[in-house]
Length: 149
Image 1 (cartoon, rainbow, N blue to C red):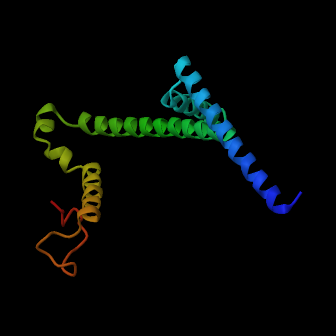
Image 2: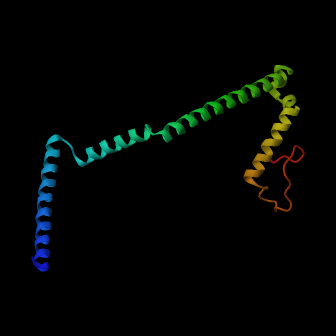
Image 3: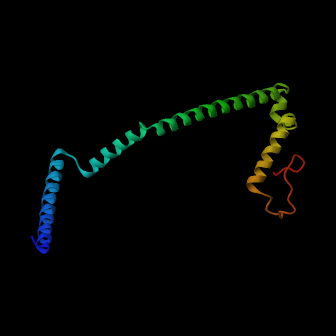
C-alpha cells in the first residue's frame, strides 16, 4: 500500500471513530437523562465521593485529631485562667464591704487592679500608638503614673 493512500485511510478511520464516539456520547447522555442523572447531580455525587475520600485519608484524620487535642487544651487553659481570675476577684472583694465595692476606690487602688490596668494601658498603647496630639518623640509608654486614658 502506498503511504499516501495509507494516510488517507487512517484519516477516514479517525473520522469514523469520531462519529461513533459522538453517537455513543449522545446515547449515554440520553440514558443518564432518563435515569435522572443530570450533570449537576453527577457533580454532586463526585463532590460527595471526593469529600468522603478526604475524610477517610490519614492526613485528614491526623489533622482532625491534632486540632481536637489543641481545642481541648485551649479550653482547659481558658477554664483555668477564668477560675484564677474569679478567685482573685473574689479574694479582692471579700476584703471590702458592699459599700466599698459599689464605689470601687479600694479595688481600684489594689495592687492587682493597678497591675491589670498597667497591662491594659500598655496593650492599648501598642495597638493605638501614642496619643494623636503627641509626636512619637514626646510619647511615653503608659504606666500607672502616666495612664493612656
